[in-house]
Image (cartoon, rainbow, N blue to C red):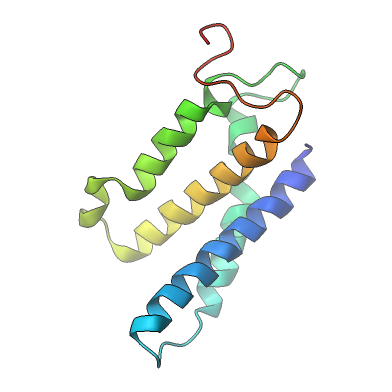
Length: 126
């Protein structure tokens, strides 16, 4: 996948996070208005940070996927988004962290469906 495709998928992931959170809150608070500003911010985060794995491990050849393109990295990102430590984080900061995490995971998910797929930890280890 190229950078434009990852950016589009990231923007969709950011929007998906916003809509999903809105629907979750709306069930409990029927008068909750749709957060248009957060939608725009999270889509911008998606456009920007969906390429983060390729910034960390530049896509200069087809075998560039190492640790930051691995299932282990995906697990660490998920822990960063939902681990026990997140109870102490400001809600607005947590929204940005989770949106960034979902866009990072969108990159890995898109790469996972390519013929090269993703390594478990690192191609030379496993």
